[in-house]
Image (cartoon, rainbow, N blue to C red; front, side, top):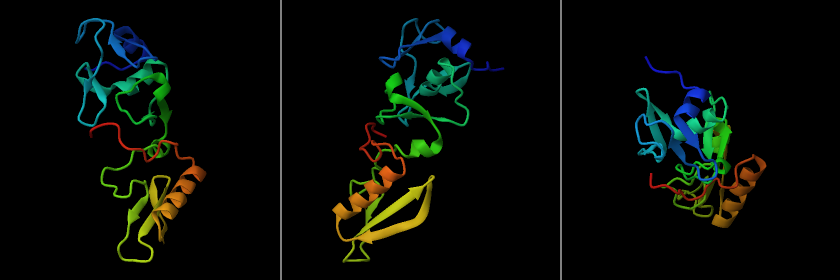
Length: 173
């Protein structure tokens, strides 16, 4: 039977340095005392096994600090999924986490929410808005990339998107 993950259990096993973002083993359960906790996963996050279950290190940090992470997500503000400094983490709802996404690798314009649309030669750029995580019928076409960027950035500002939204990804995946 697996252990329930509690603040007390985690603080007994690990120590967390909020300045460096390192979580270190305090008890030699899986690794030597003082070694950094976490294995880099394919999605770019650090993971650790406890009692046969796998946990994301950035979520455990919040539990160690006494936060309830149920139905919440941890956002890495700068987009670096291994940067677990306290100043780089925030506990958010899924909607707010989506408002701080990096630019998709398949994006050809370099601007989140803006794409080429070859069916209209006079207005080749499509601007799409997503509200509350859903695509709304809010899309329109403009003649220049500059106009498209202005429209999209204005929407993001008015709707509380994080200033880092649409940045280039800092991780390889």
